[in-house]
Length: 153
Image 1: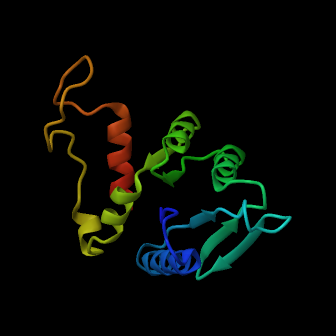
Image 2: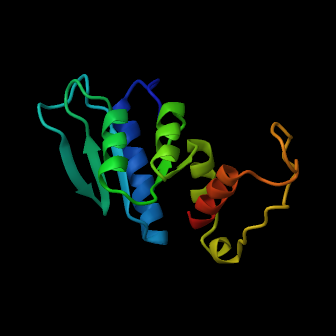
């Protein structure tokens, strides 16, 4: 979600965790954030809780992607997985979870809290460019699932 092109990655991580803490105070969702520790991490995976947000650093030699996949697989439930990584998104779909892109997630959490209750799901809301067989104005099952997940956020 924060990318890798920062001079001070630790500051960016703290900003992200603080943003999620503020969001959790408004919405009360359980959240887990996984950071890469594969270059500078410890021998063991590091777990902590900060402001109600579960923070995981992968161990040295292990990427955060592997930890995310393991979490999705071990705890079989419908996760909302925030990622812009296609591999993680495909894995989430295959595991019964719903991937949401990072930009969509940030747009969702910037909305006013009062608009969450008023927002309703409407599959005829906008025209979707046809790239598949069937009704070109009807959203696919995946697109509907992502939209439902964004409404929950």
